[in-house]
View 1 (cartoon, rainbow, N blue to C red):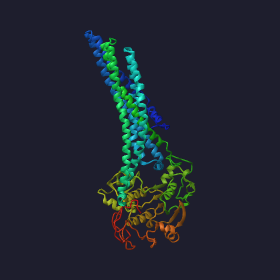
View 2: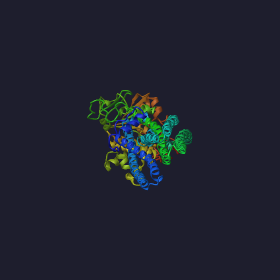
View 3: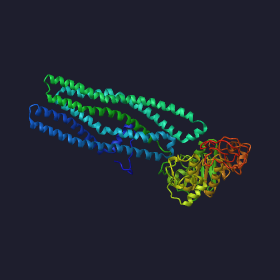
Length: 623
């Protein structure tokens, strides 16, 4: 079975059938052993009726006790041997399925890691989750074909040969049975693949919807949109259930045939054998053996029908895996990619994005502002080499520098980056082991002291995956602490304060500037509190720099910029960071520097710098 650290190999991505064949080729000897053991097991099952017939004809009917004892002993020995072979067969097939399961898991996980930032742009989260949770199991189950599937064909031919020595008519009936099964099951297999593929696609979409709803439930509740999305999700669930019923209908027919066809065989062949025995063409022992042969065939025929069912589902699942494996990362962004032999700059250097005209001076705090979030983050992606671009670093093209060097020096800190489960210290420390003083300084810079103090065990307190145990504002500040502790040469922070109330936002803005003093920092934001502390602000229109300068200068000479970032168009004084801000809907009586009681999330309070009271909503994504 594949080792956890073993290279899974290069999968065959030509299609679903090719992928399943590749899984078999990856373990040829084990697959062969499974087929041989299954064949021997089923053949010995068919040998039991023959031994029984000999015991009847040679021992019981003529009254020969020694012959009866001999054949009975042989029957016992064959049964015991077959029980041992059955154990070996089951263990071997379990290893075959586990190898396919683990190998597919390693291939999928490895490829998703290789895709990196290109993954969410090319495939939904729900699709990846469904592949990891459901498809790998289905693919592993389909490999049953290499064991009982092969054995069923072998024993079918073997029984037909035995019946040929008893009665050519009975042998012909058995041999013609398989084409009849294929005629009946074939159309159902094609239909199953079609309905299963549609069900599988809808399942992936709905799984992604569940993740989106779970992540934004608090915001939806605050905006009053929870009921609307719940109704939409309910309708999608109903459609998925209806499609599931269609899959179930086809499945039930295939399973019914798996039980009914062998029974029909048993009835037809037994009736014919009884007629032959009544005419004297068969002995009593031969009649018993024929009944036993056909009874043994119930298992193989059922296996063959189930094999068709499992293969139909397995091919659909394998196609989804192959579709994922066919995705390619953005040029120059895959781990280990080296487009050229250029070295990273030996000292702090400027970043430049020709596509937008953004120039980031080394050692300074630069802010990017734009009406369209996607256009601003696209600049960050290019500067962080998470997409193809002509960006330069110290005059050297980023895609000419080894990716490991870029990742070591340039960090993109997204405001929705994943948080892994563990203690708070482990979550913010990442791969590093920062000292207590470093952690304390980063926590203070991100205004996260109240988070540490509010948890029962402080930094040792457990944090659930994705920070579900924290509020939106707390998660954002934890991500910022983690980015500050990474201490990169260049920090590209996407909306680092979007989920914070004005009071906390002001503290974070000051802490970020102090902590990153002398190092290159880029933030995307529309917050006047953060913009007022930036050395340079680039105002982007249609993805290109329309104006650059200090925040106050842009407020005075750029009407579009003023409209975008000024929270109160009657008061655009942003030099001291006291613009009118609400953490939530309310009735403000003027501007000021009032203290907000929202803490980390603007749940309810005075909204930071607004002296009016009002009920706020969670501002995780609402600004």
